[in-house]
Image (cartoon, rainbow, N blue to C red; front, top):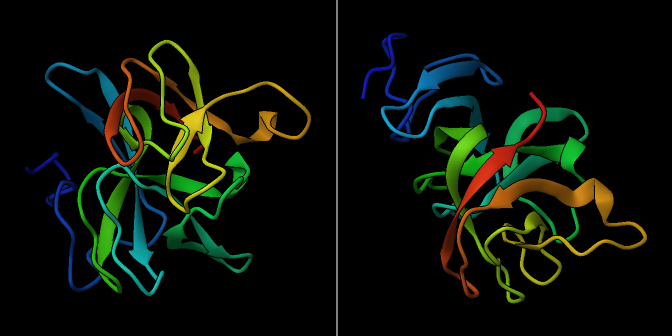
Length: 158
């Protein structure tokens, strides 16, 4: 789907089509305003829809990997909303309503959501306690068991 910038933000690219780190604003027909970031998958594996994506290293701010367990929000790039194969380019959702994949602990409706503790790229319910506040990045609208998708309001800083 063209968003007015001449690029389809809802499908991956085999070649770079925009500057890495570009931010696009998109008004959805039913879920309000969204912000998307253009990245390259440098993980050595594929991103699945709903996986949480973090920057690869301290110097590659817009090259992504599946967020390592317990990753703090400042390292997050966004959440994949479609599959992005290794070395492909794509847009990840930074802010707005989207799908997030649940870690082994699951995601519960009406709870905060933070990066998971068991599986890279997944998320779980926010549980207040020492050292976890910096991991919260979303709020769940519904419940999802491990490996399933939960609709969430994502809020990762641009």
